[in-house]
Length: 198
Image (tube, rainbow, N blue to C red; front, side, top):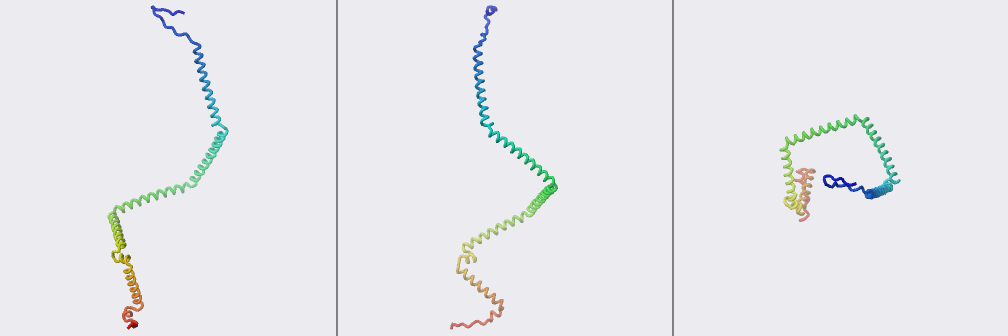
């Protein structure tokens, strides 16, 4: 057919339908679908071989059985707990009320302690300072003892002095024992043995 001319201008015609090009495109499309189907088939085969094999399905079946057993045991445990609560409800309520009462007593005790600290804070602070001062004095005394100052320090450091003080203490012990046995006059008028040395 010839194109119609209007007003002396050419009208563009569409290209003729190319059946061979469509067949080639369809053939490529079918090849791609076939390749995709092969990949899908290989994936399904791998899935059956790795995941859905007999061992995996057996393990899954065992897991489902274990889950069912666990669920039954959990339900039994919940039933036992409900029975314990039902039979011991009054004791549980009493325990809770006792805990609440104990908590209230603790609150009152804390309030009393706060009041005690508030009203006696000055005295407590003074007592703590006195303890600190006494600790410092004891520390100084221990330092003096170690360095040999004072009577006690001298006794600790000087063995001769310590021996003399021990002898004095022994003599005092003998004297007081004699006082208890003979009395003061008995000691003063006691006949001393005569000296054997001329």
